[in-house]
Length: 250
Ligand SMILES: O=C(O)c1cccc(C(=O)CC[C@H]2O[C@@H](n3cnc4c(=O)[nH]cnc43)[C@H](O)[C@@H]2O)c1
Image (cartoon, rainbow, N blue to C red; front, side, top):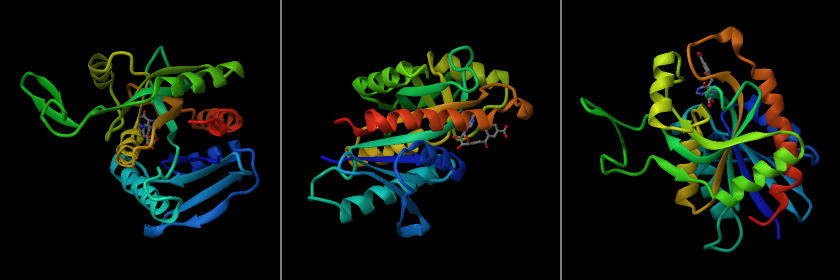
């Protein structure tokens, strides 16, 4: 059985790291509606890994991921079958100190919409507390365990922890403290995971977020960003997962 994985990044530089990490030959270009395209990597009859550049932020990436899922559902195998076996939201992120230092990896134990809600005189209320939708997508613990074990076995340790999705990059110590207090144990913040997870949930596909830390969550300090190191960590992580978890039964 071929395992079908869709890896969604925000920008092309992240997709380039993912593509470089996959060990198969150059990908096939698969055009999608809406000006989107998949980079399709096939590993014989073991796995098919599609890589999608979905845009920055939860709205853009949810729209793009939804398009890719609808396309796969309409053009793929038997009706009623899941269009993919696994979705991965991958890219660079801000890391919460001290859990996620620069260059380290974070695998989501949950994917959390950290600013989807309402401010009230008594504090923040998440959207589910307001009676609409949800603010947390769970990630199968067995899946995160396999990913973490595969990475650690090759000397690439990672934190397994909640990853926050924000629409505004944190740029002050005050905001970082606020988020850490509201989401104890969170290891990283990025801008796409929740959008990918919403699309995945609509099609019943399990989802996980994989992030490589390029900067610390806190006061803005562009000189301290390590985007190259994070992209390299992402490439190494995908290389390992391409040989292990991506070709295993979901
Ligand atoms: O201008 C800034 O201060 C700034 C700081 C960090 C990141 C940005 C971006 O515009 C990148 C957004 C892009 O990268 C992911 N990302 C990376 N670091 C973070 C972060 O600390 N908080 C949220 N997102 C981050 C994100 O997923 C986007 O795709 C600008």
